Image: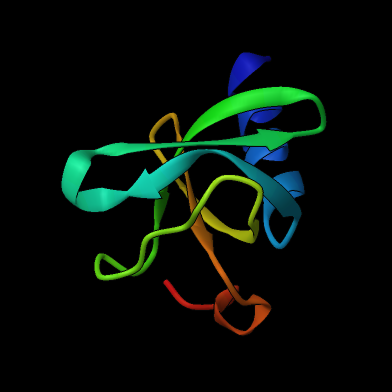
Amino acid sequence: NNASLVKSTKESMLGKRVIVTKEIDNSKNAGEVKVDGVFWKAKSDNDNEILSVGSDAYVVRMDGIKIVVSKTTNIINKK
């Protein structure tokens, strides 16, 4: 069913390295990353951090249809 497909898609993204394709700035509600050839709206797990285009980031969690990313991998288990 679709619910299990969405859950497995979310789980498969956790910890994945992604590329920032549009600057991520939570104060502007702006940001986008590319994951496996697909573009996703994104935000940072740190409201004070801006991630520039071309930066590497790591998927921390999903927030609805947005991907929440971090500059480092050591935050992956943080909720």
